[in-house]
Length: 119
Image (cartoon, rainbow, N blue to C red; front, side, top):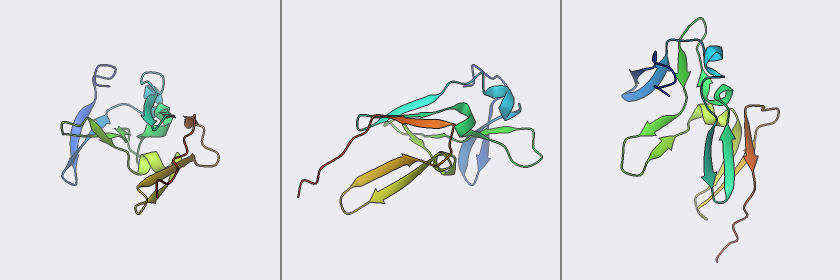
């Protein structure tokens, strides 16, 4: 992302580093790529409109996906992720259910997977 937009810098918010662009989010929609990842044979795709955000009256654009600095190459998908999807967590069965929020045009799910109980 920093290669596509040289105005991006790291900003510390609540002890965490986030990426911020000095440009308007709408200027970045055609520059940044969709983000894709797999969850058990299911492709999750989020358009830039689905992971970029700005606050009222601010010109800066915040990137709503945050890397976790560890050896596992993980990312944090907080509330920006949730504006596109709904997620159900079953801790007892160690399962995740995910679906698109009604009316979202900034993300999609390709494929599906049903995990059977092994009990």
